Image (cartoon, rainbow, N blue to C red; front, top):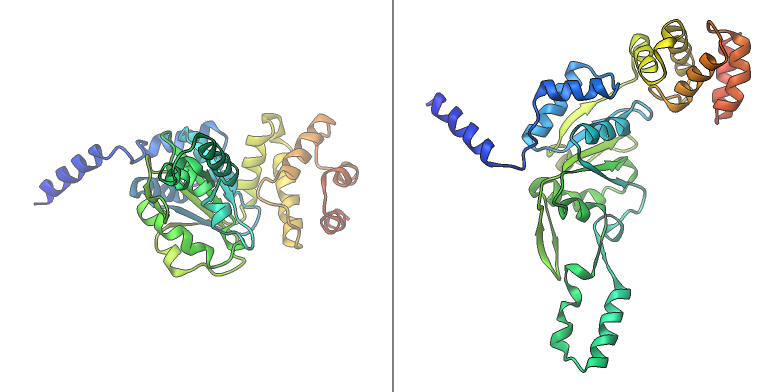
Length: 301
């Protein structure tokens, strides 16, 4: 019976073309080719989310690379990235759809000129007259799409109820139109920085992944991958400095643009090692946060 069940499962999976056709080793190689440092636990979670067709909920503090992970994954899958940036008071008209009132008015005007009846105007509330927002756009595409719902914790809890139908059945219901089912199931990635507790209904529909700040060795590996092979000497010192000032409460993220720019600038100025005078001159230009600069400066004394 077990053998039969396994064969049946394989046949059903083969028939369902919506499932992403990628193997674990291909996924691993995809991150490697894009210089994205990833551990096996994270890689396995992403792979299972793809194969189980579950949204991937990535939680972790700001700056650990949640959004960058989603962008890299979309590149690996050759999927078009559609991003919904969440914020307070985000509603259906901004996230799902809105009516194209201007187009409807033009249609009414032309209908009256042609003497058409009200029956001819019934199609005013149909899909062609809808302005597709990111959630609806993601399920109406024939190409493979990665839908990134970024910083969901910044939205109101009520917004999550809009997502449940999409995340469960990959469809949305519009009263005037009916149910619109996905032409091709999108890959869904949701990021969360923990500003509020997410609802249980949302969490149980997702595969969960937590990203934390990296170790010094991990930070050094990312800096080297994103900057240059010539940073072999500098990378550990820069990573150590970043780790030290992060512990003091700065908001430098995981291999953030400021850190990478800092590393590249030191290299271009031929600084053979990590030196205080270079740091003092560079941080004023590279750091946008005054508190971070003060903290970084004090750590060098």
